[in-house]
Image 1 (cartoon, protein in one colour):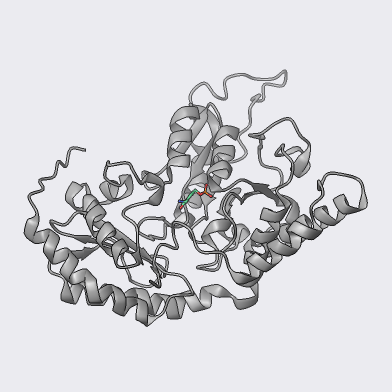
Image 2 (cartoon, helix red, strand yellow):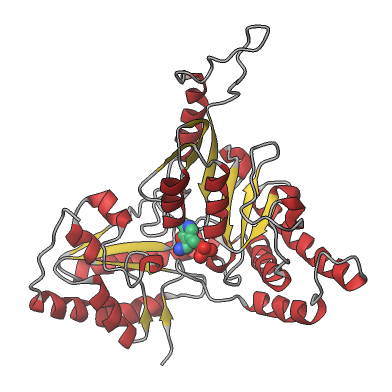
Length: 386
Ligand code: PMP
């Protein structure tokens, strides 16, 4: 059975160009990239090529990019750098921000503001410019006790140059909308290869020159002493190939037209044909990423819908895949709606460049009946206090 894969926001299948580049890298760039011999240099050159591509994509310098094992590690690295400091974030963030901030946050200044550029469950695009403006304004907010200690000339020992540093998780937005980290005013930014057709287990962190940084993994000089551990050459080459494809095709243009068209068409058909359906994604242009559609179906459980669709070869997710197996309602939908029924009855459809209108037809050939059957059997009551 041919799959209708609509779970690109969880993981997007490897691009053919990525598979080819990784095959070549497995054979040619087998050596330890830190080694001083010729095969080591070749492997390092391949890594630096990928670093340049990624820097070009986000408008940074190559040496402001650190390769990691994924977005979770990148997020943890930034939060750990600000251990003991105030960390401001939103309830919509990925768990790798929320749990790290809960674990390591404190009340020292300067403060870290961590806000994702776009949400992985609803696709909502957040107002980063507002966060940046506020972070700069906060520079002048006094913090009692902070500036009490004076040096011999009566000047404060601590001078706060600006209110805070700004981190954004770009994981879902990369390649879907144009991104320029300098124009956005970011100090740190998180990325992941497997959301853009690259391999699993590779990510990156943008760290603006001159901002605080503390390695998460110590015990090696790799990445300019910013992340210990032998380089994942093949993975990084695969990431670079996925980035090159984005650069060559300016993928955000197709996302904004074709993919958005598919997404909106599915939204329209669902609303028209399925009673009790409501959108958790604001599909107005600019409000959300073009490839994510989150929908709730009153009195039908998301997990059941997902399983019935799976049996038909249609692959979607409920809430976020990262929380799969977790029966708690999605923290994002609860934060947005406060309604456990909305959260429990939600399905996320996420599109890629390999989808077309036949995928919509396949979904609409079975979804109305699946939802209807579940609604007829429903005896569920929901607890909004969760
Ligand atoms: N942040 C966001 C916004 C995500 O969507 C994800 C993946 N669900 C992650 C972080 C974690 O990414 P990774 O799998 O690369 O650790």
